[in-house]
Image (cartoon, rainbow, N blue to C red):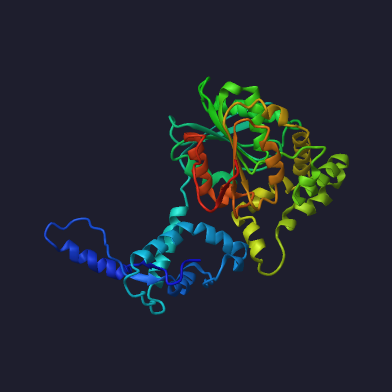
Length: 424
C-alpha cells in the first residue's frame, strides 16, 4: 500500500530516446542521463504493472485486507513505497499527476520486467571439480569464486543434491571462494553413512579443495547441515571462523516432539517403520515420493502458493524417495542424525553463529531452532518473513546479503528491512 495520490517519475522509452537524441546533437555531446521524468499516479499504473507481470493488482485499504502472498509482496516493496512517498512529498505543491491512458506504459513495464528477470538469472560461476575415494566411495568436491576470497564451505541437507544451492552459490562466488561436496549416503555406498562419515567428508573436502592448514573457513549449513557444522567445529575448532545455519534442523529423539512440524512427525514414523521392516519401504514411498509431491487439483490458494516448493526444486526434494533402496539408506541416516544431541557441543562453540529461520518453514521446526539457539554463546538470529524452508533458492539475493554481511562483520546485520525480523 502507498499513500493516497502517490506518484513516481516514469519516462517512456520513446520520450527518453528523443531527449537523449536531442542532447547528443548539442555541441560537446556525449553520455547523458535523462532526467526530469513526469510523475505518474501509482493507482493508474496498477493495471499496467499487472499486465506486465501477469498479475491482478488492486489498491488495498489496510494491511488487514492482505492475504499471505499479498503481505509478502507488501513487505518486499518497502523501498518502492518509501521512494513513492518521497516523490509525492517533493511534488506536493504541484497538481496531482493525471492518470496515464490505458496501455501508455505497458511496453516499458514489460521491458523492465524482462530485464529484471534476466538479471535475476545468475550465470553459473566457473567451477573446478575434483574427487577422491574416501570411506570406500567417491567424494566429489566443487569450488568456485576467487581463490583469495574468504572460504565458505556449504553443507547440504542429507539426501539432497546441489540444485537448491545454485542461485545462492552464484551470488556468493562473486566475492568468496565457495566450496561444497556432493553429500553422500542415499546413493550406492558400501555401508550406512553416519554423522561421523559426514564429518570425515567435510575434512576431506577441505583437503581436496586445497584449503591451507590453519586457514579458518566459514561453514554454511542448510537444514541437517547445522548439526554437522556444530560437530565439526568441536572436532576441528581451529579450522572454523564462523557458522551460518539456514533453516536449521535440530530435531532430536526424546522430549520436545511437540515442537516438530507435521512433516517431521510423519518422516519420523516413516523412517522407523522402514528400519523395522524394510519390506514396507516401497509402500511407504507413497507418503513422500513423486506422486505425493504433485499437490491437489485446481489453482492453489494464497497459503499454498506461498509455501509451495519451486518447480525447479521438485526433483531434488524427491531424491531420497525415488526408490526403495534410497529410502532405506535415507531413513538410517536420519535416525543416526536424530540421535545426536548437539546442545553439549554447542555450549563450547566459541565462534560467531548466525541462525537464519523462515516464517513459513514447514520442514524444519523453527521452534526447535529457537530452543537450540540459547546453547550457542555467540549466536544471532534473524527470521525471514514470508519465506519457506527453501529460502536459499527462493530468496537467494537476501540470504546472500545476510551471509556476506555476517562474514565481513559478525556483530552487525548484513541486511535489514521489513522482510527481516532480528530476534537476537
